[in-house]
Image (cartoon, rainbow, N blue to C red):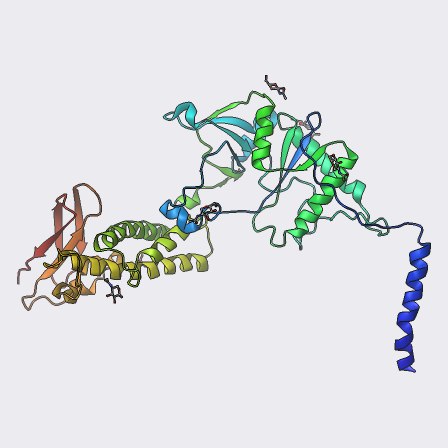
Length: 430
Ligand SMILES: *[C@@H]1O[C@H](CO)[C@@H](O)[C@H](O)[C@H]1NC(C)=O
Ligand SMILES: *[C@@H]1O[C@H](CO)[C@@H](O)[C@H](O)[C@H]1NC(C)=O
Ligand SMILES: *[C@@H]1O[C@H](CO)[C@@H](O)[C@H](O)[C@H]1NC(C)=O
Ligand SMILES: *[C@@H]1O[C@H](CO)[C@@H](O)[C@H](O)[C@H]1NC(C)=O
Ligand SMILES: *[C@@H]1O[C@H](CO)[C@@H](O)[C@H](O)[C@H]1NC(C)=O
Ligand SMILES: *[C@@H]1O[C@H](CO)[C@@H](O)[C@H](O)[C@H]1NC(C)=O
């Protein structure tokens, strides 16, 4: 009996399907959304700019940014668009339609540094009115299947047009930009583009405004072509508060230990790279690359600023310390090379006496807590301590060098000559 039922069901469904298929009064059909729309001069043009949030590794890799390589990419700007402006300034600019300006940012550089600058009316997200389309977002998608109860094309088109008119109300010219995205969006890009396609298709069928796929370049060209005269902005945009009593100042001071570590490591990297060059790069030996990578990474706006979570901050510090450990080996062998008496020939043997003794002052990453085992050895037996100081700058320098020692507290004021490095022998009084 059960077996018979299972066999019968598909047949029944097939018959039902045929009946519905043939007799259904409303046909749903394949819709090719028309998204080819360009600018229409006499309409309000809504430039849809799909975006997520890109950081350092955009046009160049993180490494290429850091070392300034791959300059096939022309870095020049015709315009600048951003969101982070003081909330009171933003409100005032909305009233005066002065969110878009010519920014005269530099008195020194004068007009060559002038740039067309657009401040977004809200933030860098879609306009108000439920236009978020990540898979788990709650904004209603456009349902254009008339057979479904959720059919909502007119409603969604009205939402879009209302958002456009509201934004046009605070914007000069008949061009506005909808920034369709925000942080971490487009993880499944289809979920956004599906809706953007539908909006463009149905909004343009409606005809009250003109919606198009655009880019900041297309938008900028349109603004330029409009012959508008723009308000002038001088000075900068700081300080920045995004709400009453909510000033964005913490990132100048947060996580001072990490900030200090980044500075120290940057200086060390610079010196290590010089020494790497002077010794000659050894592809199978230690390099400064790992330190360079971690320093590049920590330039991220949520890294050195200190705005990241604790475990992320720990990770940045860990990466720096791994990079340092490798660079340190290189520094050690390079200095050994450069100071060994028979290093003129270019062939260098780091296995020198110097190596065995170690360059104590250079290898004390924990000087911040006055901890340096090599310099804190018991020297009362008549041994001497050799301190090698390398000046990575191209000019003379006067500095206080602080080294923890076993018995004696020493303050050495070193006047460094303009030769690249010097060796100072300190004879300890016994
Ligand atoms: C798509 O829209 C453009 C611009 O409105 C129009 O010129 C073109 O004919 C449309 N294409 C189709 C297939 O409807
Ligand atoms: C430099 O950047 C261009 C443009 O992004 C890319 O095509 C090229 O492969 C890059 N070159 C290197 C060496 O990475
Ligand atoms: C346009 O802006 C003015 C203030 O500048 C405001 O009073 C008005 O409600 C706005 N209109 C729309 C449709 O947003
Ligand atoms: C802007 O000015 C140019 C040259 O005067 C003119 O050809 C063009 O039509 C103007 N554009 C608009 C949108 O008024
Ligand atoms: C390069 O480094 C490796 C590993 O430290 C070492 O064995 C090798 O001798 C070095 N080669 C040169 C040319 O310095
Ligand atoms: C000293 O510096 C190291 C990194 O080199 C860091 O881990 C440690 O927290 C610092 N100590 C203090 C007391 O700041």
